[in-house]
Image (cartoon, rainbow, N blue to C red; front, side, top):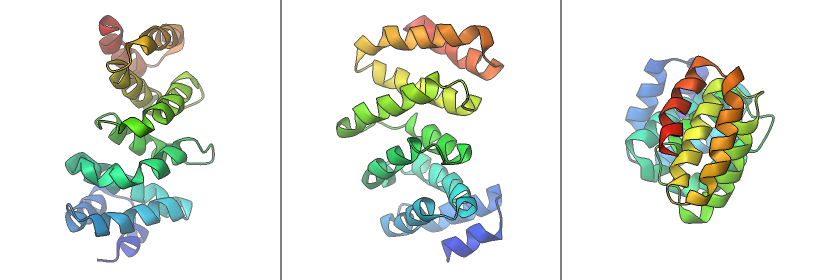
Length: 169
């Protein structure tokens, strides 16, 4: 399968699932997808982020060689929200390798605090920070402060996730 050609065909769940089925747990095929994700153009990159997220949910170890590049993407302001959302969706279910925990925390705290970010990005960032707070309890007060400060102006989705996290902080 030519992954790039599939992505050029459109953006649908059917296409994403077909790509994921083709990739399976094959690191070489996943590498092809990640090269497309990081190379652009932006529309193809955005489309590649969805099957990336689905593949990593099924086979979490596929992401291990690409932590540095996906974390880098989170820090770039020009990266489309859909790409950030899919990366964060995946990270909320991952055990972050220790060597990347600090950088992931920096990026996700910044995204959580940024009220200009779409709700899903802030919610997934909240979850990633919370997950890491179980290992680093000293960050819990800062997380709690940020969540509580955001609540008066927050969307229903933000309030819902905050309602699950705040009681356990």
